[in-house]
Each structure stands twice: as C-alpha cells, then as structure tokens.
Length: 533
Ligand SMILES: Cc1cc2nc3c(=O)[nH]c(=O)nc-3n(C[C@H](O)[C@H](O)[C@H](O)COP(=O)(O)OP(=O)(O)OC[C@H]3O[C@@H](n4cnc5c(N)ncnc54)[C@H](O)[C@@H]3O)c2cc1C
Image (cartoon, rainbow, N blue to C red; front, side):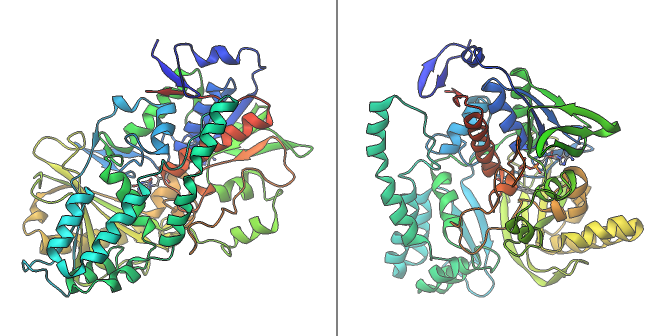
C-alpha cells in the first residue's frame, strides 16, 4: 500500500478505514467535469457513497480532447497551476492524483508577442516572455537599460508572490501545533499588503512607466490590447518560474481521465450517457434525480457540478432563487466568460522551429459572422506533446474569444446548412492569414477541426458556450455572489467553475474541495484527505 499524508502525517492505512463508524450517506453528483470528479473523490474518501451522472460518454466536461484521424485536438488546459511544489493547488491535485505519474512539460518561453509599431535594438518586432524570472529580467534589462528601476520593481513584484503558498491549504492539527501555525500565518498579512500594492497596476499603467518604446508597446499588447490587472499575469509567472505551471503531456482528456480512474478506484460509480432532466424535491428537500428514460435515483444529498443556469432554472425550475440569483440570471452582476472559436489544424510538418505560442498582428481585420473582430492572431503549436500527432507532424490551434457565442448556438439550431457554410468561410479566412505568416503552411494542412460555442454547449451544457463560467468583474478580489446552496432548499449543494468568476481547472478543484468540506461539516463528518507524496 502506498504511503499517504493524512492531515499532514504520514500514514499507511486506507482512509476508508477511518470512516467505518459513520453511516454512509448517499450523494448524487451531476456532471463529471473536473469539479464533479474532484468533489466525488473527496466525498468518497470521506465515507460517503457517491454516484456521478454525466451526459457525455467520457469524463472531463470542458477539460477534454478529441481525435480526428491521426491527430488529437485539445480543448482546454495549456498549463496546470500547481504542477509542482510550492502551490496550494499542488497539494489539492496530490490529494486526488499522483502527480509523479504525470509528465509535465515546462516551457522556456511563455509566449512571443509581435508588436506593431516599434522594433527593439536588434531590429526585431518580437517580444519574448521567458518563464524563468532571471532570464526575463536580463532580457528586459538588455532591451531597456534606461528602465532598470521599473524592470527590477516589476520582477520583484512577481517574486514577492512566490513567498506564499496559494491558496493556503491548511491540514487540521492538534491545538499547540495549530497555534504555532496560526502565528506563522500572520506573515500572510504581508501578502495582503502586497496585493493592495499591486491591485491597481494594469498592463496599461505599467506600460506607461517604461521609457523604451518597444517594451512599452509590448506591455500594452500583453492581453491583445485589453487593459487587464497585472496580477492576472504575475500570479502564473510566479508559478512558471518555479516550474509549477507545467503542461500535462497527453492533454486535457488524459488529465481528466486520471480523476475518473481515481474515483472509480475509491469505489465510486459513474453513469455515463445519463443526462439529468430534473432535480427531485419534496417539502423543499432535494431527494433525487430524474435522468434519461425517466429513471429516478434517490439520495440523501444532491450536488450539482453542472452548468449554473440550467441547474437553477431548468433542473430546479427556478423555484429556489433570491434577488441576487435573479440578477445573475439577467447578467446584471456579472458577465458570462467568453466563448471560444477553436480552430485546430493537423500539419504534416512538426514546425519545431516555431515557439509554441505566439500572438501577432494581421494586415486586415478578421471578422467572424458573429460580429467579433480581431486584429491579431494567436497560434499554439503543440509540437512539445508527441502524443497528439504522429512523428514529424504536429497539431496547431488558433483560438478566438467572443462574447457572442449565442450567435453560433442559434445558427446551428436554426440553420444547420448556413452554420456549416459560415464555419468553412471562417476557416478559409484563417488559412489565408496563416499562409501570409507561415508561407507554405497551406500545403501542410491535412486535418481541420473547428469547435464553436455551439460545440461547447452541445457537449457540456455550459451557458452560451462559456469557456470558464463567469467573467471576473473589475475587482478581481470581490467575493463571489454564487453560493454553495440555494435559498429554501435543503440537502442540495452547487459547486463548479461557475462558483467563482474566472473559472478554470484550479477553481474547479478548489470549489470541489470547499464543497466537500462544507458537506462534511453539515453532516458532522471530519473532513480528511490523503495525499500522494
Ligand atoms: C478552449 C478552452 C480552453 C481552456 N483553457 C484553460 C486553461 O488553459 N486553463 C484552465 O485552467 N482552464 C481552461 N479552460 C477552462 C476549464 O476547462 C474549465 O473551467 C473547467 O474544466 C470547468 O470544469 P467544471 O467541472 O467546473 O465544468 P464542466 O467542465 O463544464 O463540467 C460540467 C459537466 O457536467 C456535465 N453535465 C452538464 N449538464 C448535465 C446534465 N444535465 N446531466 C449530466 N451531466 C451534465 C457536462 O457534460 C460536463 O461534463 C478552458 C476551456 C476551454 C473551452
């Protein structure tokens, strides 16, 4: 039996043994995405009897990949926050899967960005973001010695974030060690100070501090000419430098499959191809699920880890709402995260000479039939993952973010022929742009795949094809208005990437862990985990 860390202490026993004194409660979970799978693992580990219901034939939800010919198209993760020690997410992932079994690829260059107006002192328009902070600082100092003070401050701001394990994952400890830890935790006050200091800095405000025109333009363009809080850049950079934001070789579905395997190894059950139609209630208590073929499954507790809008307004028919929930439904409090047009090519050449990720300006505006316009293109060569394409070949993806996913969803629903035609036209426009950038690429294409917001909706039910739930509001630290429970309904819980604006797989596992802690607390079961070390 492998050694695990339980509540910070090395153990050799199975955790199931710890729970034999508690009456197992039955929990039914809707959705086998990363949120549902993680919550299922945590609850099963804590002695609950858990069954998962998934509409698709595979686990993962948005965290997925699919095959087309010899190529694998990846639909989600570019890197996993917490792929190595030093992050609270490392601890969380390790509670569910053995990260030592996963090969992570750590990029040397996070991205290349081509600026439009200026050139650097070497006559190049390409700006490189190195993942190693020392290398990035030296690169910036070489390009802009006149900005030495700003550069050193910027790099130090990122290094300051590295002093803290985020989010803190606190194992329960006996009294004295926990008091000692409490005292040590006071250093997190410094973290609050750092956040307050960095909170207002955006790529635009930082850019204005540089005298060097090339570097100034590059920082302005960091997020496709949008103004974004620098913490959105700095937090991942702190992890990249530590090699704790690696890409899991095998891609998103392989990653999700590990969670499904773990849940089944813990004794849990997954019902695939089983869409949930209704959450059944009696006297304002959730009692079960009505699924495909009108079969009823009863339980003590229902947890939805599926789309927030459908859960509240379709499966529960909008019966358990508050003013806040109604405002969320009307998108008055938060906007829905962008949906993605993901165009992927299978290329006969491996393009290893190209950096894996780059953004560059295009000569004319690219307009999607949904009305979204782009003046830049981004290319993502997956040549670093040999599992996605045959030897000597590669997969390359172009992503386009849109606020108008509904257009594609409605078009597919109302006019399938036009939907296909629009897709073809859009792909042709991209191929023409790629050909300008990478002469000869057109002839290397032997596979094309185009996933639209309608694809996302069809396979995952995410509202308007959202890629990450809600878009964060202006204040990235504002508390989330999405609660784990609904007013007036007992024995029901909700947790997914919709639970915290910004979403993503780290939020998915974080919310899953928090909801498992909450359910354990409500059922008076001490929350325990075991960790692969
Ligand atoms: C193109 C793209 C790129 C991304 N890149 C990144 C990235 O680099 N980093 C990152 O962190 N995140 C990324 N994300 C986001 C990330 O994949 C998601 O935030 C995360 O996987 C959401 O997990 P979840 O379990 O909360 O929700 P989901 O994945 O949506 O899972 C919900 C599950 O519920 C199922 N379901 C829904 N309704 C029902 C029903 N009625 N009955 C049964 N089952 C149902 C769905 O089929 C699905 O499996 C990306 C997403 C996309 C689309």
